[in-house]
Image (cartoon, rainbow, N blue to C red; front, top):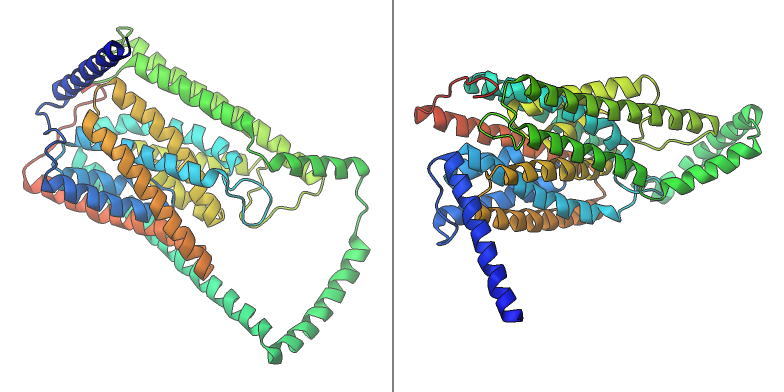
Length: 454
């Protein structure tokens, strides 16, 4: 019975594999070669992909801007194959990043490294922006999109690397001051200066100090205790949001993707389905805003002490930052790149601590890449044998890259390395995407605007 069941399982798996391969070939056109035999282009492609992933690992931004050009230029995949394979590679890396970051703690507070409040604010509006941007991606000329993308990423790389250099200089000054404090000649002088300022500070606080209410003290203690653990309600809300978006997206279909319900692209039902998705993520965003504003008021009441890199989610912040995230998602959807390459630099610009920004970005990528990978599987755009290798490569390269960067940060005590990782991978994306576009133009591959349902 065991032998018979094994044979039936292998036979069924082979049939599924063949079916997916046929679907891929029918959608893409000319099929790519199978993984075996493993040729030179595969070796070089996975080698360069591994290097790119190891650089991107510390910043938690995925690296899709690097992977897609590598898969097209080095391994010879068509864009319709390269993008899904890039996404499934990023999904493998996101799993590794999330597993490594899950147990890590915030550098300045006793709470998880991943900022789930930040995810709850950023993800809904990023998805809304991406849905809107994806329509422009279909109707705008590809050459125009590439020029706009290169300009956007160039500015992003510049601002991120500029911030990284500023952080590096600040860390250097702090190290010099720490070294001076340990020297006997300067230690006494610094202590005298410190004693005076400390006494002045004590006298000032003694005058202004207000005795806290006993209930506020208890509430603060409970709040800090709750922060020590992952907020499962936030996680549940995000999971439900993504599941609903995924189901509606698959059921509505699109240009080249038949709807299981028979919904025609461009029909009233098609646009109603898109409106439902936008309305759904807007509803989740409103819920998140209300939840965080109430928490911010409670923190103000109990005199909650924010640490460096924390964001006070008041009425203004819960409007401004989600609006910026929607703008970032819009560009991500319009240019067909992952949100991590936009959200990572965005969080640094918001003043989030680099370690928190990297871990939070990686966790967000896990949600988005899983959703996209599932869609690609449903629509038969993933080449099965390459997809399995890509997941393993993404997981292993990201795992090794993050561990190596962690050791470097621990040795040299520099969080700026994360900012350099993010800025470096964005700059590398600019170079490779420009090269890919030039090669495409040189080969005479000019695209036409096809419309939303083209």
